[in-house]
Length: 465
Image (cartoon, rainbow, N blue to C red; front, side, top):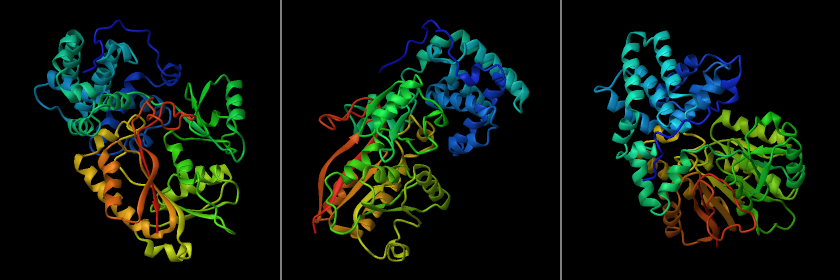
């Protein structure tokens, strides 16, 4: 197994701007907030929801630290077991895990390990863990003294080495025997910021030049994408409020070209396209950006009203139009006739609910929130959606099935089962499983490399009759 050098000399600290700013909250206060967020995540809440409750002055620094903790949590938990013979109370455990996750690999520590330890103990003294501050101090001081030996004692534990649950690692080894290590390594890295240029308003070359004038280098990826060398706030992007660009991973940018390329325009009318699980609207918008004006009639379906409102906001910023319908895609009796006049679609995009196992580097809490049983439950939902939406497709039409998952039960196995039970479905060329990172699938999009992208699955199905 690939392992880091645990005792490498500490590089110069490179804290984020939020940490470096003179007005930044004290580190102990940030660490205390991170520990509270971590405890909530381990109790089943998403990082997005818990971070939303953090006050704005604290939030940027807390998010950066929390994401690093979540990416190193497996090692921290293993180290905590070496330091504490019994499971401490949840709040104490969260503080210990926070410090250990940030400090165990000195080459990646955002602050010197002794500073992290001192400030974690201070956080313990300032909060409801005051009575346990001595215990926390003793554990972390021992960690500083015996760090190399303690880390070495956890090197035989897959969850510590790869920072994923054991079931997740085992599934990846089975599903991707040649790439499982690369997937796990990619999941623990920070992803790049990638943009999709709105070609209804500008072109990629012009937008890249606008970025370069701001000293923001970028790499052309996918059909209309630009991967930024350094991330920056969206409000700093040229023309963002005017809809010149959107943030979207390069792998997700494959959906619109795959579905629409080569699809014949019906005589006398626009192509009828359904985006079946559309929120927050990125792929809906890309479909409209990719096609010639007035050639698509897009219905964007979303079961959740709040998320559907985000679709409308996205389209409004980009100056695009689609029919947004709040309804359950698996219940067409409630919306197909009433909202779509019972007219079958020429193309359907089904970006199905999934484990999100392909975007763990962007959502590092996912690996700790998911349970192995979720894979089968979500696969059943995916199969039901495929079976329900297929009759709504015109003969000769296409359905693009995709998930942001690297698990085969949600991808290749799902589509194979669908084709087996549907004699009128045939598969067209599509990427299949894409693993996260920089390794593009051999022979795919030779002229439009994806750069550094998320994990995804794509299957394109045509209805023969």
